[in-house]
Image (cartoon, rainbow, N blue to C red; front, side):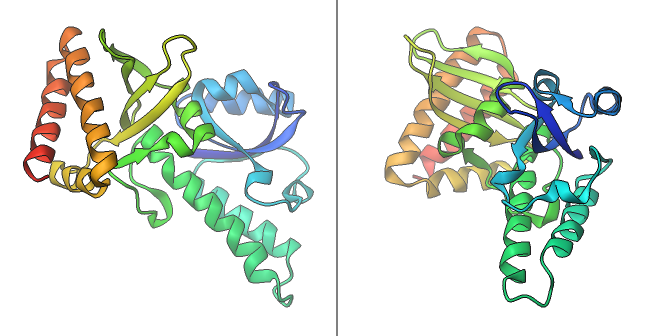
Length: 244
């Protein structure tokens, strides 16, 4: 994953500074940013994930730069952010640990979650769940959903199955408005047993809801002829019911 600290224009951002992470489209992104001095919102959202810097800290990180910052690796970007915050917060001040450490932890956690979108292994040793309920992190989930590929849609319920590089996405929506109600990211590359055990930890209320999503997803996938993924969901469903 590559990263950038850049102003974004469009969608009422008012040229605000953002953290950007992407994989595909990086070469074109660099060309556009170097030419314009900022990144067009629609272009960034086509390939990447974004978050306003102010969501990590209210300190003026842009005071450390005279233009967009582009990094070939998110670790490099993280280290640069640390160095800038250390300049803003003197290590001799009593607020240094809170002022510098807290934004870095938030940044690391956000980048770590991007494995659900881009795949690979989590950066910064962030521990990820086999199944991520994105219902409470709407901005992240809606961005990720916008980058996903539709695989199947249930004919008898409002459940869709989508795919990202790093996960399968199962969600439902209100029929009249298409508003998303609940969304799950099932991470790829995780051992089946680990995923099953996590389903059980969802609890007596949440686990049955997730199983219902799996059941509707299996039907939709079979209707679309996606047998391999349907079989994986069947196995996940079967094992989770056996150990419940």
